[in-house]
Amino acid sequence: MHKQILDVSKRRGIMYPSFEIYGGVGGFYDYGPIGSRIKKNIEDLVRRYYIIEEGCFEVECPTLSPEAVWVASGHVSSFSDLMTECLKCGEPYRADHLIEEHTGKSCEASDMSAMDELVKEYKIKCPKCGGGLDRVYSYNLMFQTFIGPGKNKEVAYLRPETAQTTYLGFRRLWEIARKKLPFGVIQIGRSFRNEISPRQGMIRLREFNQAEIQFFVEPDGKYSPRFDTVSAIKAKVIDKEGRESSLTLKEAVEKGIVKLQMIAYFLGRSLQLFKEMGINPEALRLRQHKDEERAFYSTDTWDIEYMSSVFGKIELVGVSDRTDYDLSAHMKLSKQDMTVNYEGRKFIPHVVEVAYGIDRPFYCVIESCYREEGDRVFFSFPEDIAPYKAGVFPLVGKDGLPEKAQQVFDLLKKEGLYVFYDEGGSIGKRYARADEVGVPICVTIDYETLEDDTVTLRDRDTKKQDRVKIDGLCKAIVR
Ligand code: GAP
Image (cartoon, rainbow, N blue to C red; front, side):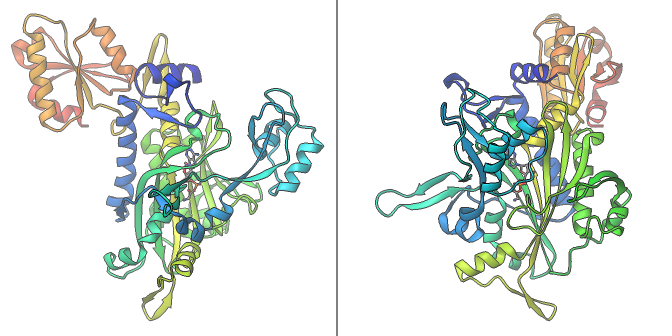
């Protein structure tokens, strides 16, 4: 299936590897004309959940920041993976991935010497050329660069997460939130990680998109008044000891498996969000990070993982209790006060973070919505995710039908709808082209249209055809 999805994605402008004419570089992908529209719709759905429904503010900060930011946050010292290289051909490997691939078991080792031992114990060689492997060493994933020219240039880094740049504005955001807790701030934008050997298409990118929400809360305020709205959602749950169960979120909280109700709430909201994007809910599970894998800034992290038929498990979002780690760290280095006086108490707010990638959910939407029916290939994207609301086609390219179809096209555009016009080839071919990019409705203008101002609406999933009046067309399209 992967090959078919890739073929149609490249051919129809959904996504394709970047820098193709120069042979490509691992970890970079382009969104084509169709993919860009789908990605935008995914981001807008996230905005609907978090800005409209959860009341968050949105910010947009630079992707490049001075070194001090990443020294304070701990990324300069700790944002690393353990790697090894082939002594013969130089191929780099992420040590844990290499050990897992070789042994077929998850790699429990978390430090350099333990991984080194495993490489030796299992006599692991370079999978590419069979050469011996170098010692395992720590490799920082941030891209380093400089701000400014000449001798006074400053060391800088491309951000590996949006979160830090949101924290930097905390004092201003606190004022904007009228000095009340809790409040949430979303940032949607690019992040960069110089991943060691990204071989999984758009699942592990070196430049990628995140939608990260930081909820600033009282230290003892990690609950949600709206937990009831998600508490009945049932999910497969794996705790940090690897114990699996199938539970409602209410049960998971009551049994103390998910300790913080606020984390459970956002896991529930994320399950709702992914389902609305079109991701197969049956393929999703909640997994708590083991102590040794958890990021240095977090005391508890839960991921939602998608079980892909192509890539295996894919982490789509991480929900973490970051405590006051980040604000305290920036307070220490910047000497700016991050404490608040709130309801008679003075403290540094804690942060619960909901950190979505955009590219991975994008891929999972594509994989979940891909359908084959005989020769017919289509994507059953939800209407809010589909790249266009409708395609407009004259049945034939003569007898005034193209002119009438253009009028219908203009009418839909005036309503602000994303629609496209196509008069090339047979009507069957045009339907097939629309199916291949998941357009939910095709509007065909035929000879009857000239007589009674009705058009044919053809549904992508059922292929069912209905006739509607042109003056009721917008309503019929925006269902
Ligand atoms: N601020 C917390 C943070 O960055 P993370 O788990 O490292 O947490 C959050 O990243 C999300 O960003 C992940 O769940 C994933 O969807 C996405 N992501 C992380 N690294 C990625 C990469 N190399 N390529 C594509 N998406 C990535």
